Image (tube, rainbow, N blue to C red; front, side, top):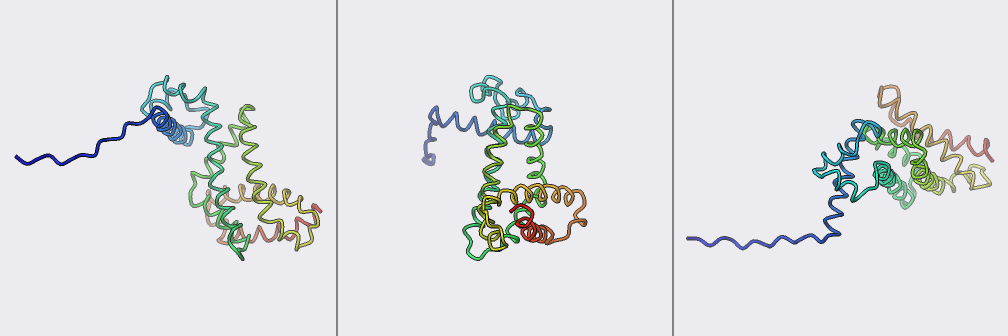
Length: 209
């Protein structure tokens, strides 16, 4: 009779590790269900069931549905912030092309845009979520401002703090154009986001300085 192969004993999760796994699964399920049914159309029971846990397990990790949405909002901006940081660290990078790439990450992955809209709708409809959304949006706004300050200064903007106005306008235009492209890709040709960036960069200093 052949001997059974030695098996590496499974590591027993600590209470903290087990809690982290449960929390991650609940967040994953909430993300999927909010994307499918919307924040308001998803219940705590549905999130717990989808993750394979009880209602009690949910409330052991999150006080309510608002808390899990706040956590998802906090996580939702990290991808954009990392991408912008990468652009800023690339010597000689063209900001217009960088923003074209950022836009592409949205219209080539529609779920990113849908998530962004879900965040915004939840923040508008639920005042208790506005602070979470606003603080993360401010991080994005600041990151874009820092990225474009030097270029705007060379175009005549003498007060670099006005770069925040550029960030606000560009984010709004980026969101609008992305929605149009998702509905009809032919309406927004390749390179349009970079062209819009250059047009705004040329006009914003004169308008806001």
